[in-house]
Length: 607
Image 1 (tube, helix red, strand yellow):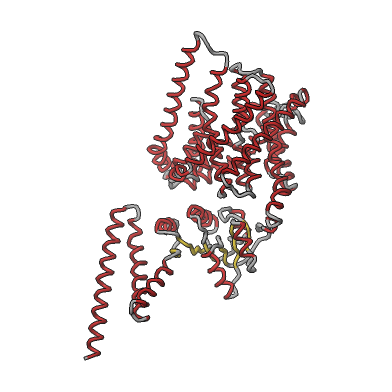
Image 2: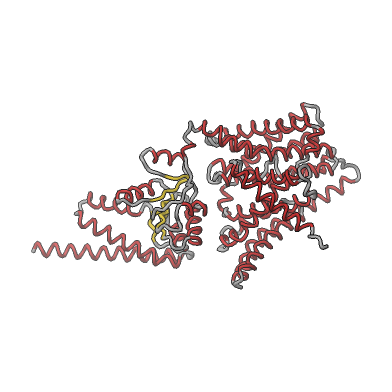
């Protein structure tokens, strides 16, 4: 009788556990992460014992975190990343140093040797990138101040894991004759690290786009998908080879491709693999929880768990206060960063290998980190249901996200000053509209005036479907954020081609970007009001209302035609300037000629 291979049986077990546990956890309001962790505990060595090779699975599943960081990098253009340099290195270093300092000091106060205390403090100060970012995305917090701050700190931690790992041999049993060898080895490692990062940056600038263009021109979508995965796997392997964070390398590659014309295609191809592997990662974390150590040293394990979670919550909440984050966001922000992280597993295993502390101590610390990763999502659910409604004095509970499908012919994305005027005019004409906005304070304000506005981010495909985008005729795009506006257009163009878009443009660059995406009905937000002000100025200077209106209309028509002439040359600055200068001179000459004709007509009528 032929037996099924082990990998096939294990795959069936993972998928079956996820299919059962995750929907059940979501049904109970616990979130998908709890479902994956519970599935891992159930099938792991301390559950049903269906899977035993936990470490191998954990290493493989870490690739889900790598793919997640690559996709996040695709969302961050280099100039936007540069704008985050201060929160990354400022708040990131403040979080790591404050948490590590408190944890190290507490451990030394209990008589633990300073080397063990320092490594434990540094390892426990790190947070779970996977859990934190997944929770941020599930709660639609990435665009909030706490979401941006949390992302910056997590990115700094990925970078900081490198010097922490390099520090371990110095704290271990290295000395005497081996010291010179160790220094030489560290110098070579530093050179390899610099070379690896430089190759990613240069390769991303010079090679990746031409290669992707060549593959895309082949007309085989499955090969482009394979190339996308090859790119991430290759960069991860390179970073692993030189002892760097695979996730950090993937993030850098994503940032370098953020301005590429293939960004959307890369996101579409990699997203399904990311979601599956990230789920597998959480399952592997659940399987890796060593309940044997918990049963053997329950008091020590619980003391470590409660101690490091309590100290980190204290330090991070104080940091949130110093950063002036909205007080409603501080509890979630603190808890997102309080649990232990994936890199702590690596740090503690490497510390045991470098003889910084015993394998038994490493097992205790790893168990505490794994338990914190299990407990944190549960605490987040408790905060969502118990703490936040009290912070908001009951208002948060009134923020409804669309649950029932809508059928209005018009969808308005963004209900600020611009969107409200459009909505009021439609309402006055008896035309219903489905309104989406993700600003909680704005929603509460406009609802006081009787408008029904749904809470949600219009970049989400599922939300657009529920809002009726498949049946609606028109999408009024009036969100403030330029990047979000363009992302909504990309999602709508790909999934709802019948939906006509009427868009608001903040400036010329935004106008060009919308036109590049095929949006033809674009209005600049200040153009018409500026024209009306110019008309008023002309009237106050003595022109008749009729002449001032004609001048404004002429200028409006000329300006729109000029924009159309400039658009084909939008990437050639000198050509754009030349066309604009020529258009200005033509307008001035035309206006002068009209004034002279009017003067002659007036003189003739007097004669």
